[in-house]
Length: 187
Image (cartoon, rainbow, N blue to C red; front, side, top):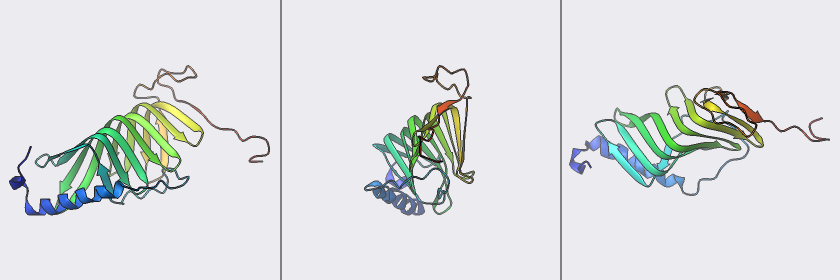
């Protein structure tokens, strides 16, 4: 564990601001039926975890235990997350690497997988390992999911070792279910 004397004065201010933002997680309300399209990837990032370890020389923060990260109305939950940043007078998050039952939600869209990487520079979230994407009653299952926050396009493929679905498909294939309109709906 680092001693408090190893922090630079500018770092103390930036870290204090960064940590204070985690209080905003309390009372967070989910918005209505929105998917990834329209997400504000420039919004501040708030987080909470059971344990936080600052690795100042490596320019990263390790969050572990019930990690909850929010950015606007986007929420990520995981067992462990590494936050890589630059420190040019203020913290600039570059990347989040989340592991352990990762879930990403926004409105009625949710995705889960074994791991996720949120690249802030490219504004892309990539999830891998037993990936499932849900929007309302529609489902897609596969090995890897890429959510482009610039375009609002989510794509899923069989790479990454997707699990065998209830329909019996596997071996790198994508499977899913789309809801069909009932009689008198959508005509």
